[in-house]
Image (cartoon, rainbow, N blue to C red):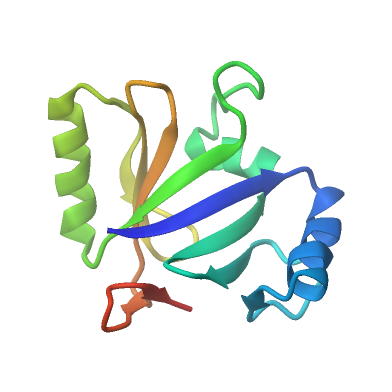
Length: 143
């Protein structure tokens, strides 16, 4: 499993957070802009991502986004897989294990395929495959 930690922020916080992590702490990223739509950082053993909170809520459910502060704190875990079929397989495992499917597997605007589920404690996970996802020899997603 490849892990991505996603910290979702208000729109005005993106630039401040990118400057903090990239410029002040020195986290490696390919992001050159200070206010991109999404920014990934390399961290040991995982990826660290900044993404606007309101967009994450809409990504989970565009018609009825989860309300901030009602069990949804703007943090998701990502489970990236190496095939579209594995997204469906993981969602079936979750369903059979008693997790809550909050977004059925589907095509996504960036060309991939993904779904969301909540674990028994209410933590949101995204299961995602992308046509351009590449993994290194340790199974770490490369950007």
